[in-house]
Length: 86
Image (cartoon, helix red, strand yellow):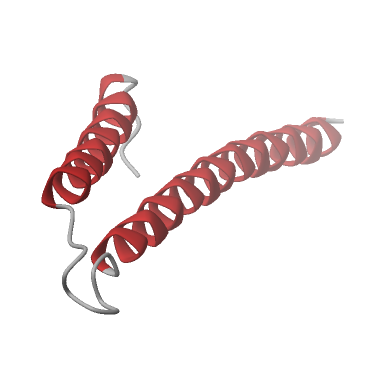
């Protein structure tokens, strides 16, 4: 009888660990997606003025750059404030 309870306990413990791993994996995937989006925006911003050099808009470039930096700080602060260390 105790062997059955031991097996059930191990099974439930493994199910709980699997759910925790799936939740962590989801958080990592969403964070990677956010970082990729920011990376693509930075690449787009770095291409401003690459065609002829006369149309460089520094205000637009630095404004967008600061927006992306603030978004990265926001993502970083939210993951640390929840106690999640990814």
